[in-house]
Length: 144
Image (tube, helix red, strand yellow):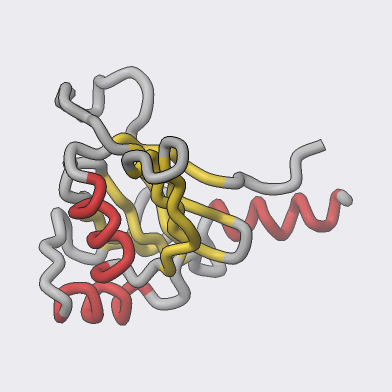
């Protein structure tokens, strides 16, 4: 039934600043831009997070909301990486400010957190062999 998650969409206060963050700091490749009609205003920037998986950014965000442990709805974006320590070092070298140190989470995956220019929380996660996620992936692959 499902193939994969295709994209996550976010609305940005400044689409160029947010697109630059995902492209220039996080290293995602800009896939394409869409405009409102011929010669119209920029309506969407698509950035490739991984093959077939995208971040879709819309302009025009103006109402901020606090995202915390009690907020209903969107909480965070998680990006799986090969080596979380190396990823953290590389991003710090590019000027990224992290919200946490690299740590082991309750699921036994390794992670650290940051946020984009609009305050959207981002988790970088490395699945360890003993992580609940890796165990679930292995178990579910055997069930197919």
